[in-house]
Length: 507
Image (cartoon, rainbow, N blue to C red):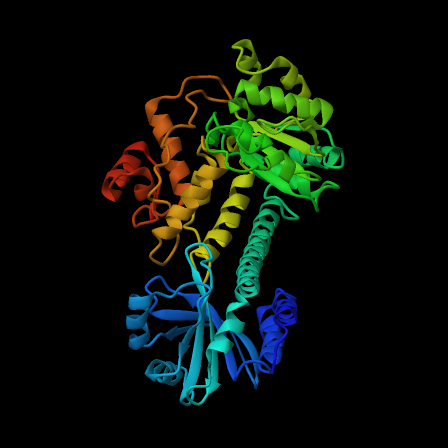
């Protein structure tokens, strides 16, 4: 039968390149090819670098088609032949001898004839097409010629399939990342912030006032007070809550890269810029960007930021195209921006633009009523993260001691203390013996009522009584006042006898 090669090529190309789903395309191709070439099944795959295995990615036969990821070892005789002749792209190899039989055995089929068609390398990978027909000497040179005509369509189909798989994987990864980040941000923002009705009530009132607006917000406060948590609360209480929320730590990005990270760059803008890149502001379009440690922003980046604030537009590094950005800007710092202005390290005009609605977050030592709530919150969260079956109970007096501590590291320091205590927990009541609390830091030497100076014995008496109250009168043991004060129980009893402090049966 004389074959119209042009029509043959056209029909196969339509079928094999007609879909990104390789199983569907291969099935259509199989149904057409079997009228021209002896055919019972087709394998499409990738050859490894040593030409010892085929990683099959799709297979079709009379029973149906499926995608797969199966390793098929090539027979030794084929490897030897390949070493002598080489598997040359666009050259069909006909196996009507023992190699075909061995290959058939490997895939659990009867004795067969096989055609192997190497495809032009895809990057560092070489594709391969394997056709099988039952019986010996089924394939002729005419069949090999027809198959060789189809090199380019099969390469396109395989290349499209591999790229389609990569896109699907990246899409799944992105969806997974989005789900993870959403959970993290929801957890940080939450419906209720710890201390929202106590020490942070004034702050949360201001959050509710400013959240519905689009004006910039400046968060001020010491390191570790929870500025990022407040930024999350503002975003998720705003009309932009369904848009992106992009966080940037200005102090963590090298000065030479900050412009590129925030505003993006064009291909070739600088050494290493091999492709165009969108910056954080473009990614935050329609949402909110949180610029933490704004006091560390270099001067050049401050100029670009000022333009975004004033004109709602920017240009990528190395570009000339003006890009409009719709972004709500929240900034935060623990530094004194006014002093930075005096030292010419922060632009005065940028300061006035950012300082429209400042929110000062008080340090933890100024909202001691939040400490028990925070301890409870961290105990629950960290116990869950550390796979505790239940939440440990705290030794009596420990919370009171922690409320008297100044917490220079604020909420972050408190969180670390709780986590460390849980890591060292061995059962029983949870204590914080690993943490050295100041012994007499908050004791006044003045009599609040009369203004007189207290004697050392009076100070010691007050301090011992405070420790006894915290331990419910217990002196010895791991949770007693002696342990709390860092002395031996006998030493403490002797001191109490001397000062006339009653205890035990005497009391």
